[in-house]
Image (cartoon, rainbow over all chains, first blue to last red; front, side):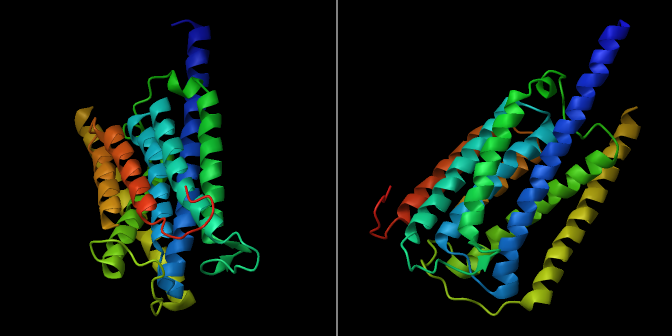
Length: 232
Length: 49
């Protein structure tokens, strides 16, 4: 390999690392939105409406792309899945915005920083679509034959595993919490509020989920390192 | 609506075990989400798409 080729390979791998960090940050952005909605559900006691659950499903769909990029390697297909997921979730958000668009309508649920959660969700879906489109403009990370973070020990792998574990735990919490609210069928249009854990309880719950994600990521990271050592 | 999240849990498990059917199941999950969204469009508002 010539010096020029080596320099080019190093440059491409640096671009791959940047792309991975962007995917990790995207997952943490999503975790922030999900943590806000779970805080309102379990801390404040605001049960999610059916359209809110559709939007949470859209959030999970967005997460699929970055998780696949980090675990399987960078592929345009993965960004395409996130774009489609954001469109599905965005359909739910637009529907809910339209439901409360008339003047004098106070909207559904409490407002956060002046906007209702479905408006924040619509903003999130729009950012996800734009973000994926920008990542697709950048072809270098797709050209290095990336196979994911699993085989590359380091802080980036650990933090990626934390983000992936955190989103997965959120998915389990969202899925399990549907059962007491709706049973196995459709959810009521305007579910009754429940007695929440309170502000401090909600924050502690969010921190506990984060701590669980760190522990799971540490175990997964260690297992990957062990299998690497056994393979070498 | 639980079915929607069971599908996503299956998608996530597929990603962790590197299954080839993940993109297909992800698209099925999105279509199922749209079906449930349509079933909940019961309010007679304008632009009732």
